[in-house]
Structure formats: structure tokens, C-alpha cells
Amino acid sequence: MISRSIKALLALALVFSVSFLLPMRSKACGPFFTDAIFIFTKHPDFPLERFAAGKLGVVSPTWARSYLVVAYRTLSDAPLSDSEAKAVKSLWDDRLNLDDHYDDSGSKKWIEARKQVPGATPITEVQIYRNREKPHEYEEFLNCQDGAFRAASATLDERIKKFGADSNQVHDWLAAQDTVFANCHEGNRIPGTTTDRDLLVRADRAYQIAAANFYATNYEQAKDQFDAIAKDKASPYRIVSPYLAARAALRKGSFAEKEEDARPALSDAENRLNAILKDNSLKAAHHDATRLLNLTRVRLHPEEKLHDLAHEIVKRDSSADFRQAVWDYTVLMDKYLEVEDEAAKKKPLPSSLSSDDLTDWIITIEDDAGNHEAHAVDRWDKTKSPAWFVAALTTANGKQANFEALLSAAANVDHSSPAFPTVAFHRARLLREANRADDARALLDKVLAGDRAQMPASAVNSFLSVRMRLARNLQEFLVNAQRMPAAFSDDNDGREIPEDQKEAAQTTGGNKDFFDLDAANIFNKAMPVAVMKDAAISKTLAPNLRRDVAQASFLRAALLDDRATAIAAAP
Image (cartoon, rainbow, N blue to C red):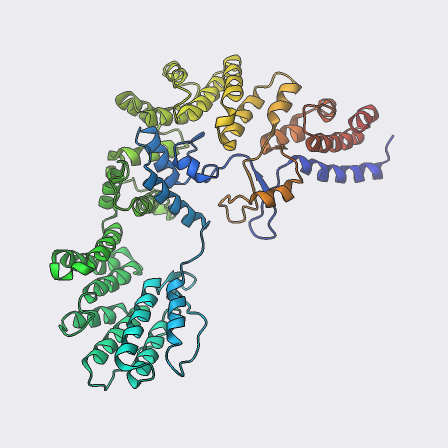
């Protein structure tokens, strides 16, 4: 017999031992621990280039919408071109901060350019981000872009050539420009006017004063000053100033607290930019004005712009800037679908959203409340589109009236189709839900035997999870319970960013197979100790898992005074 005190210690040890069977989960705030990710939920498996090239795996409704856009394109027989794939990969890197290095070559060039001026106070960096005003003071934005520093460097070079590096004009210009850039991070520092009679010097100062007001967030003053510069035919800044005035109006509208307060400034920006694009004398500013007008319309006419983008990004190479188009489309989708205000949640979505096939598909496939099952099937019936067939399967359950029709169509999807992994997974899921276990097992075994090497790890683990639930004996359970993680990550911010291979090797200690939560829960909550003992001595499990199961089964048997099982579990 085991004493009560020893049992208490064993019970405590059991708490720690069963944790070996659970994949580690990261905390909401530090310290952060490495977690095994078996199925990515925020994005597809890495490398993302594979996904962009059409290797979809099992499409997940929980992925960010930029990935669903690519899935829709691929499933609609409109795969991304090489340039589109490269563009959207850049977007993903940006949002995942995989390439979080800001191009600061312009500011570095500016720091070096200043050194040409004798006696100029050396600087080592320029703070380019500025916090918003209250009550949003904890939000920051990129205030001074790299191009501003490049332009300043070029202007300084020109003024040195004209006046000389040690001239009063250059010293005064540099002092004023330092004041301009001081506003990039904080403050409200505006250069004084100049008494110099030289027209170029006076034009420079007028431009610097307007720029300083812009960076200091005095947008109305900046707009008026740029307007005045645009009317000065002698100013070298006459061509760019109308664009900068429109930019000031856009900034003002973008930072407005309420939509009704933003609209006048945004409308002003739109009118100004349209006027620029109609003025051939301002042709040098047309490219930048076009891009800024696009952003203005995103903010001023979101529903109309969403409609335009939904048509633009589904056609191969139809967008002049695919990255920006997908970016804007997903931001606008967030505006309508990621609503936090409770009152706003109760408002119906604009009817125009469902008029666009892409938007309708995303809304449908993301539905986890069972409200779009019939709609998905109806759209598939009408379009015969693989994308809508995937949506119909994803939203289906094993009790639908058209259940057999879905299964029959799913059986005919070719293995070479990018839809195949998704279709096969949901076909197996539906068979299981319909209590057709033998059919589901046969399908899963065939897929895992023949297609495993071609599928990403998340897809493989999705199939293994369903197959494990259909196990007829311990051997089948163990074969499908142990899985190779898709990645390891501390996942401290929910982005599921994988460790690199070297870090992962250190994390795993060379082990390859682990238990996901579904398998661990069965061990911890449902498996009898005698069966657990058999698992511990089974050669089917990887050595690291056999060891962990042996520890847990030994302690559980000891707590139950089952000496024979305890000894057998840990000989």
C-alpha cells in the first residue's frame, strides 16, 4: 500500500508529468515559451511563396483575408502571375513583420549630406515616427518618409553648388531644415521668415515653413501655405505644392475623430487630386497624385472602393499595383467585418458587399454560425466554380439534404487540383459526421499514403487528426496521434511566426514527433491506465513520446495502487 503522503507527492508529480503530453502554450504576456504549432490558423504554412504559387493545402476560414483572396483566385482558375505572387508575398512579409527593416537609406544620406557644411552640429539619427494627439497619444505614425530626406539632401547639394558650403545662405537653410525635421517626432517648431533678397532663398524658406507645419500636424496652415507656393511662378516648388496641399487635407481628414468631421477634408483632398490629374502642367506629380487619390477614395468612399477592388484583384495582372490593391481591399473588409462597437455589430452589412463574388465567397466561408450553408450550395449550383464548391463543403455538415451530391462531386475532384486537399479533408469530415466511419477511414488512409509528401504539414496534421478520431484500436490511435509540427514558435503576439531551423532544432532536441492537444487530451482525460501502459511500451511511438507516456502512466498507476501496471509502464 502507498501512504497518503506519498500519494500526495505522486499526485503533484502527476500534474507535472501530464504536462509533458500537452503542447506548450504561450502566455498573454511574458515570459514566452516555445509552442509547437501543428496547424497554422492565422496563415498558411511557410514558405508562403509555395502558397502564392497555388499549393493551397487545406484552406482554412480562419486565415487572414489576404490569404483567402489568393485561395479564391487559385480556386477560380485565375492563379497569380509571378509578379502578383511577388507583390502579395511582400504584403505578407510587411504584415507579419518578417521584413521589419525600414529603408532608412534616405535619412542616412541626409545625415552624411549635413557633414558638408562646416560647423554643422553632427547628428546620428532622425526620429521619424510621431505620436498622435490625445486621446490617441499611444498611437504613432510614420511622419517623415524616406523621400523627404532624399529631397533635402539633393537640395542641400544644389545650394552648396550655388552659394558655397560655408555661405550664410547654406547655414541658414540647414538650420531651418533641421527645424523642419525636428517636428518629425514631436513639437511645433516652425522656422522664421528670411530677410534675404534672393528669390531662391525666399522660396526655400516658404517651402520649409509649410513643410514644418505639415510635420507639426498643423495641416490647415500647411495646406494654405502650399497653395500660396503653387501660385508663385518663380518657386521651384510650384509643381509639387498642389500635391502637398492635397496631402495635408488628406492627413487632416484621416486623423479626424468622427466620420462627419473627416468628410469635408477628405472631399477637399479628392477634389484637389482630381484637379492635379487634369492639369498637364502638373504631369510630374501625376504618379504620386494617382496613388494618393486611391488612398483618399478608400477613406472617403469605402463601399464603392471595396466594390471596385473586388473586381480588380480577381483578374490576372489587371491591377497596376496588386500589393496595394489587396492591402486596401482587406483593410476595407476589416472595416465592415471586424466591428467592435456593439451597436454597429447589429447593423446589417451593406447589400453591395454580397454583389461581388470574391467578397461574398469570403463572407460565406468565414461563417462559423451555420448561416451560409444553403447559400454556398446555391452559388456552387449556379457557378460550378471550384471556389464555391470548397465553400459549400467547408460550411456543410453531415445532415444536409444535398449531402450525397456534395460527396459525389468531391469524389470526382482530381488529385492535381489545388482544391484537392481541402475537398478531401471535408469529404472525410462529412463522412465521419454521417457515421460512415469505414468510408472515412478508407479515404483518409488513401490520402495519407499517396498525397502526404505533396501537402504542407498543417494539411497532413488536419488529416491525421480526423483519422485519429476514427481509430479502431490502440495501434491506429498511436500512428495518427503522433505528428510532426508545422513549426515551432513563441507566438507571443498571435502571429504564429516560426522559429528558424536552428532555433527549432535546439527547441526539439532532435525529436521530430509530438502530440497535439487533441491527442494529449485523450491521454489525460479519457484513456484507462492499462491502455496508457500499453501505449508506453509500444514501439509505434517515438522514443520521446514513449518516455513521456511512460512517466504519466507510471504515476497514474501508482496513485491507483496498481503496482503491476506501474512496473510494466516503467520497467
